[in-house]
View 1 (cartoon, one colour):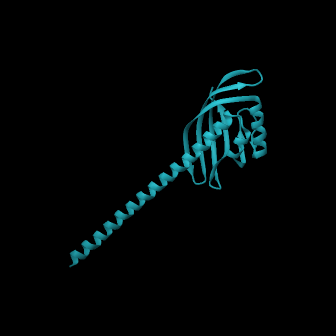
View 2: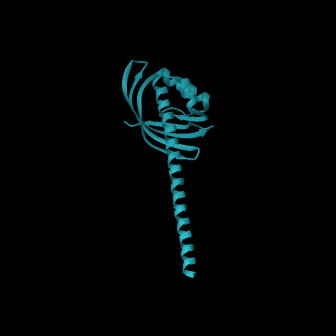
View 3: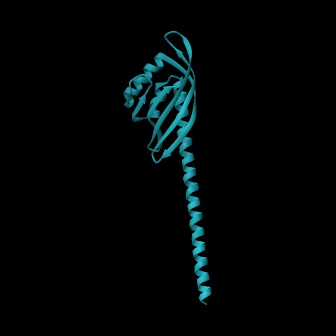
Length: 161
C-alpha cells in the first residue's frame, strides 16, 4: 500500500510538472506572438514615415510623432514638440525632395517603449540647384505606445558616407 501511495504521489507530481512546462511554453508562445505583432505595428509606422518623407508631406509626418516627440536631424538643431517638428519638416521639404527606402536592421520592444535601428538609401533632389545626389543614412528611432498606437518619440539620423 505504501508503494502505491508513493507511486501515486510521484505520478501526480510528474503530471503537475508537465502541466507547468506546458503552461510556461504557452506563455512563451504568447509573448513571442505579441512581440511579433508589436514589431509589425512598428514596421508599419516606419514605412508610413518613409512614405511621408518621400511625399514631402508634413501633415503625414506629424501624426507619427508623440506630442512631445523630438526630431534630431544631422547638422541641425533638435526640434522638440509638434510645433517645432512641423517647422523643421516644412524647412526640410522646402529645401529637398527625398526618394529613399528604409531597411530595418533591428526592432526591440520593451513594454510601451521600443527602438528601431534602420538604414536608408536613395536620392535627394536639392531644390536650390536642381541637383540630385545620393542619400544614405543610418537612423535610430525610439517609439512610445500612446493610446494603443506606436508613435515616434525620438528620431536621430546621420550620414553613412
